[in-house]
Image (cartoon, rainbow, N blue to C red; front, top):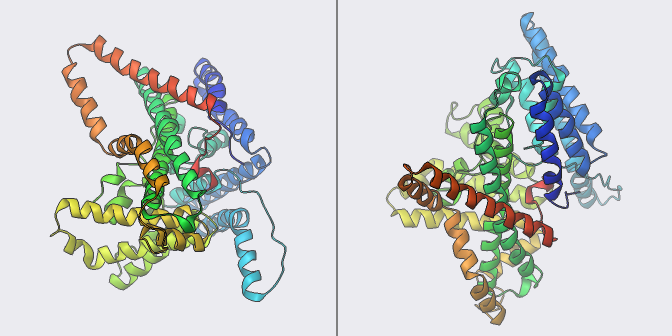
Length: 473
């Protein structure tokens, strides 16, 4: 189940802000915890109990890990941590992968076991990883045990980033859970960041997303080359602005409440290699897998062979984390193979290439990867790739292709520019010219942000198309 509209957040947020800043400081985590649970229940009332169980599980195991460490009983501390990891992954596995596992067992063995048909709880992949990081960080001495369940619950359920991102590791906010100091600078910056993210999501991602939906509805087997490329470029921009926009909103909301979440995107479409792309895309997920899977497996410390194995494991897990479908596993393995090749030899070769060729190489492979990601049916994946390279006999273009290109060309150009750092650089250059005119500078910034906000709200009110692509993960 997905929230029908961001308008829910607009109704909800003013009340939370008023109560939060009116309340004494010692009650503020409780207010965040309570309203975060209400916000989650709005979209998933049944699975609030599951989230509370996840909180309690990780809170108790974190307490036990800390207790046994202080008693120098490292075996028991490791046992408590192991229990935490196993139960967290078991919960995630049951609710996210049970249908997938049963379906494949039926196909392989010719059985007819009924599928569990469990509804996927919104954001379970995100909040499970967050909660797991708590016990692990306490075990590693990278964070102190949190003795207050309400504060810990506020961390796990914090509504600004509860649903999709960024994945906030406990060690990065452990101090702010109890010692944060809200101020007007953070609050105003948070509002601005939230409005920019809202514009990315609503005005850019939603607009281009409708083109992708339209092209998919045409019948993938009969798409000409130009239409297929317009479609996958539309998805390429949609998933970036959808996910980066939500990240900006979450970071902005967190800043309003005194939290400083780490960045989740750094202009990934400027990358000149796949290695660089994955340093810039969904940074919090990459960091989580690096810190809690890749490095514990040995990282690059045990020779090339073990490093390749570790990368293969991480990218298989990264793929299947995104969804219970073979296409996601294929997508993860696809990038895993490319990254291994870059580690072994490809990056050395690429240093001799001109910059534009490096960028073309990276973006070409990223776009191909999005075909694997966007289409869950592997037959459709094959058909779409065939259409992109003219292997389906549908020709290069038709009237529909030309109409799609001419009617959406300006939007595609805007999206291409907006996915770079050029708008930021132009804005900074413009603001530098106004550095001695503070009032004018403030008026220009605020007019821009208010315009983005009003246009976004108008779009939300008048449109029924408002998907969040990462809600399904």
